[in-house]
Image 1 (cartoon, helix red, strand yellow):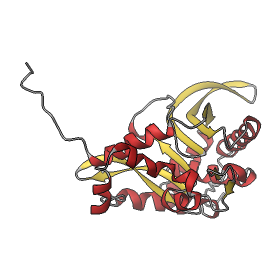
Image 2 (cartoon, rainbow, N blue to C red; image 1 turned 180 degrees about the vertical axis):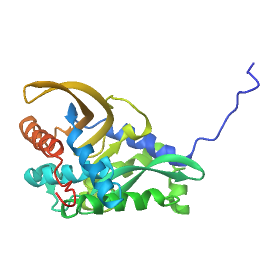
Image 3 (spheres, one colour; image 1 turned 45 degrees about the vertical axis):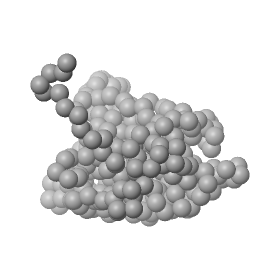
Length: 262
């Protein structure tokens, strides 16, 4: 016997893709690093840029920019390992970002690939992401795709093995690295640990204010929680640690956020 408010709803076809992705990604050799990164200077500069130009910049665009510049020093992380054990290293950094947009009247986070971010400015990346957010559905499914989501699960999950079978095709479809901004859906600090089908994923958590020693004195700083996930089959621990150090250095220096007139 059920309550009057109970109901049975159809499971969305799009969510089946998420289920398949998570099951496949969970089998990879993912290693997660939990970071606290000081973004006080970066957020101050973003506010100063908005005051000077009247145009805002997103923290996500800034992080994508820093991630891309860090990969310039460690290009072997911007790669996939194929089924033959070969490493496909890509020159272009194509970042798959999670953007919040309206899909059939509902606010959802959907993927969007920002191409060649290692050759673009923070502003260019920001404008690309905003254009995707303003789209009614940047990942609208074709009738063929809708039909594909209704195939048996073991058949659908073959798609997520593209990085191992055809790395170049996966890059064209889904990019080379991923940034997912979970923190945009809630306030406060906190980390998120998620499996991923990418060699490198940056999961953006929340921002909290905490005391920190700066120049010999204690002051409150804005700290961003980041989770860096790498595929240990492709990236060893030493290289991953050096990459994370470079990423932290760029973010805390507010690299790429030049205030007009300064």
